[in-house]
Amino acid sequence: MATNNALNNNLSTCSGLSVPGGLTASGTPSSSTFLRGDGAWATPSSLAGTVTVQRFTSGSGTYTPTAGTQFIIVEMCGGGGGSGAATATTGTIAISGPGGAGAYVKFKMTAAQIGASLSYAVGAGGSAGTGGASPGAGGTGGATTFGSWTANGGTGSAGAAAGTTQSNGGSSGTITNGTGTLILSNRANSGSCFVFSTGSVYIMNIHQGGTNFLSVPAGNYIASVINTSGGGATNGNGALPSGYGYGCYGICAYSGTGGAGMQASGNLGVAGIIIVTEYQ
Image (cartoon, rainbow, N blue to C red; front, side, top):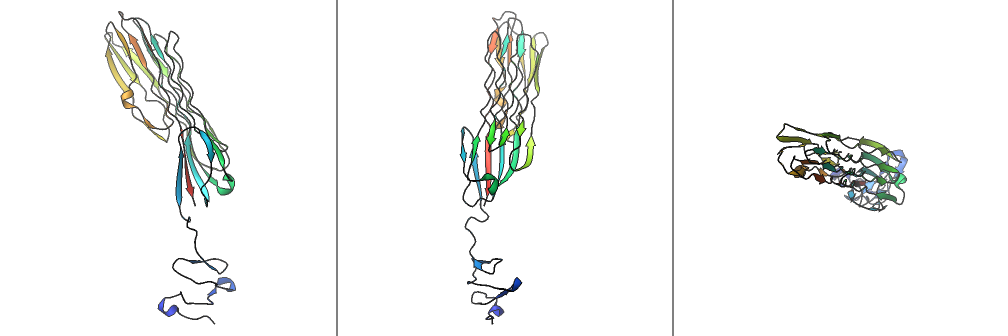
């Protein structure tokens, strides 16, 4: 017969306890043990309830889950696209669009789906368009991969030749679903840049570039430049977005009637990221 020491709410010296299903508890109960379904008192794993975060911000490699991981939640985005260059000849103006954002995806994978390890790669930011007589386009951001999941990079914007007063931005990257459960995805294209002249002043609106859920918008750059005999370039870099995978500002080049022309390179896109939250 079980010894009854429960009158004083003390189970530490009870033995032969009856549990549902006709089982008899074995072992010694304490404040650091729990009663398992098979009737045994057991000590919980030291990792139970632990949450661990791993971040990958560049390059490629192998992800190995922390011992005891039951499932993971992954957030990642591709690299942002770069913006094209702009070339203004004497008495003209040119403006390029911003780069598109890298695609964003959030998903869950169980320990069985992860296995012993998974390969990963973080997408780099797209290249800046090179200035010249024929202004170059911005490069497409690199794809970010984790196992069989892919978040592609945003595309770059086209180069802007003399007389271009409006340029569309690049588009967001696409997403390929892999093994696991999709939670959320996001694709956000960037806007366009435009400029016009009042005769003596150039007024320009340069879009901030495409953003995703892992980047923070900064707002468009609006400026006015007196149309003098010289020339110059502006891209509003005083108010860049922050975070990961965003496309960068376009650029405006201008040259007055007495100027010698202006060739301006575009801006670099920003690399993506992978954030792995492990639940033990």
